[in-house]
Length: 251
Length: 251
Image (cartoon, rainbow over all chains, first blue to last red; front, side):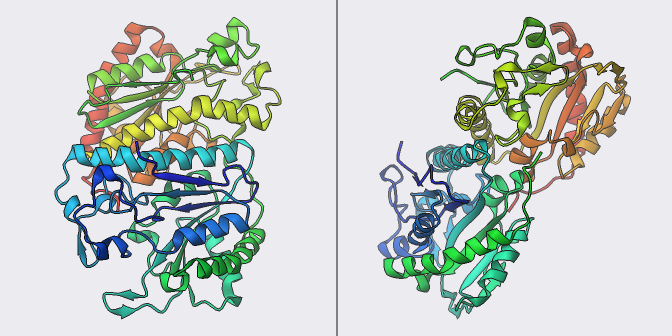
């Protein structure tokens, strides 16, 4: 079994639980390179460039755990359920994914067992341990998006996406007003696009406050930019959390 | 690690996925007897008498998988999240649970790791494998309840409970009209009582049709009665499933 999950600061006392599903463009040997050339393996289709560095930075600054998937989302996209075509997509943006064409049930199950289930187990375990201690974290998933979408520039720089409970996303949008970032709710994607799988599985059933953050990837292109962004976003996340009404545990 | 989960007919081709969280009144040696006498260990507080026999019968008749928890719910109630007092309850109905008094964080985490997480892993894996094959099962959890509640008789015999999507529960209530059972929706409990944890984790996020069945336990008191009830309910479940509108996969 390959290591497909990284857990950072598992026992840290912070009030957040960070998740990074598209952290890596590593292709585990057992699945080969899926027939991709180097350009595709470096592109946004394979991972969210910069997201892991930012997520690690937030985990460090806020002293809170991080669960990250460490295989390319083209092998299995951990933010998609096993019956979604996007879980092992045949085509993504401008790229065909030859190694994903016509996967049969056995191949889909093999990917699910190798990548999705270990990631789900790690995240379920991390959250369960926090809940068992009586801690109800804010669940925040960290993503990045491309400055260009089929040639059209995207002007939004920070997107804040939520599942059914918008309370933390709204508090965060409010707290982010002083940032020098063009911020928008439910941009460049929203839950209606099927991007809220992690939130639906791990935040909403427990009534946990949550958000998915989407950062334009040219703003977190190297380690220094990722650290700077983490330093900038951490106090904003903390202010948004402090602004939430105190709520009891779910029944 | 104790075996705290039973998976039956994992690769069966049926259209249901059965779950039985309160299948057993077994007390794994590592947690002792929780200070309970034999009366408490046999009572409804420790398990749902008859539920496992009925669930196995339905799994057999409908050729569908079953995931069951095989430790008493007093050790850990797999239909509750780790932050719910009811996950390791200190008092249940007329019984104090001495071994659950004042559990600290380490003890709660130990129970969570030993019982809840293996059960969650087994259920997540079973469902993920079905989804990866392109099968979207109806998720049905099987429970039983006592004829008397603090001395008052309960007249309902079959309760049908749902989470946010009522479609399968309504179809089932309709299909059950010809049964010689007093049937009621959201009785003797409902999702508002916190009994829908499994449905919230495993059915609702995937948009799967679902129901929690509650059978009065005097009707499934022995193996013959459990088999008869399974034979009676199976075609009703199948009719309800067939009556559902055909829906696509969630995004």
